[in-house]
Image (cartoon, rainbow, N blue to C red):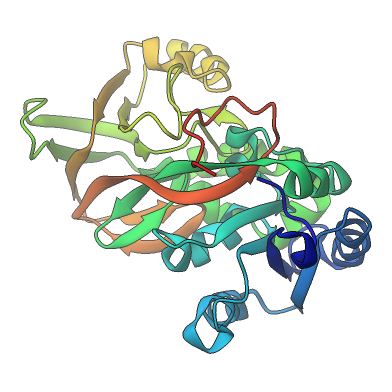
Length: 319
């Protein structure tokens, strides 16, 4: 299914770019020119300097006042931009086209969407539509990972200045800073469907509930995790003995950290997380809630344009 001229039966698209993302200002005009060269029928275009305007702009594009004019919403931004608007796109007929402009771009990495803006435009113009799962924290959707513990400290240390100056190194630098400040916590996990027994852990570094494959700038949630596997990957990381710390860190990139004796992994569709003390929850890089929280899976909830050769999501939407 291609995004082409409305005159030849293709899809009509709206373009919204968060120009405060790492390379957004320059990219907006590059993408505008390239998409038009590729024959994408663009209607409304927005270059937003204030990320807080993203939700209202997406709501406007998708709303009844638009008269259903847009089959595709092309969004330029990072994982935080996607997460801030995914509630409007979930279970909606409008397809998401993505220009990855953030520091991590884990959602795009999961789906095989190129980080190069011109190649991403090609994927939008000539790609295929797949439907992917979304996670739910309460009634709010997320795309990659919800977590408590170290990840919250990383988010707090990951300042805009650090992102600008360190680029891809921003995440590991923030992680070191957060680790040195981390206070251990305890957690209780209950599984409403009865697929696992109640889990209680102490002296934890992190608890994560992952939907996508990647988080934190390319680290793997679990070796077999995927974004259309109809399950959430839940893991707990206990604070390891000092001699194990380097080994655990080494495996984070590939997801093999799951094999560490400090890590426990559970696959499920629903879980309730309680912590002592109550903690902030990092959802796709934003602190939006506090424990206790219920998490669940929304299968095939989001339609996304991906490259024709992408194999990350196997369930193509019927054309």
